[in-house]
Image (tube, rainbow, N blue to C red; front, side, top):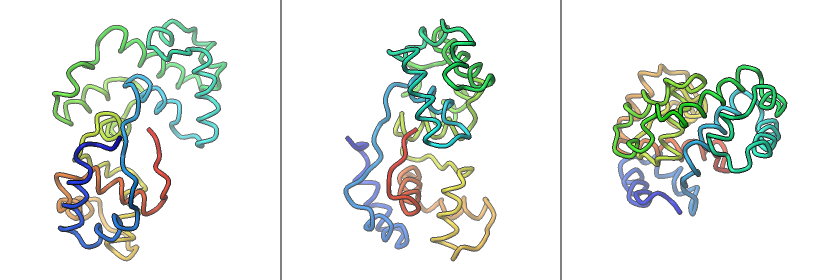
Length: 205
């Protein structure tokens, strides 16, 4: 099921920005949908970092075989060698175990995330080794369904902005940010459609 604000957001974007309107009309009947439990989402993002989609899927399948319920306690209780045997690098095995310990120990404000501002959630998440701002922004968009996230470090978003708004010319991030001001308070939705303009198949995080 799509985010509750989706239809309202895409109508507002199409009215205010002709370029965005064309992109939205070119990709009907698809929308951003929520992605699972918080630990599952964050664990998969760590596994998937800097490797191909195929390799990530293979490693993730082995992690799930090791921890079938994908509960933090299962991962926190696994040995480093068991995690590494799934195909994780030594560092990623440490990151995944560390994430699980944060959930088990309650050092993340999991139950408060829905009430917290975007930047507060990002600050909470980046205290976990292996989670940077980009991963936290993906979590805001795909798990918490926050409507106004602008992940400007994302290379796909940068490329799409250059193609559609600057005829492919290189421009500064500051200029891109100014362009995106017109999309507020629906910058997550605008970002998602710009991604679709490059790849019509929605990604999962």
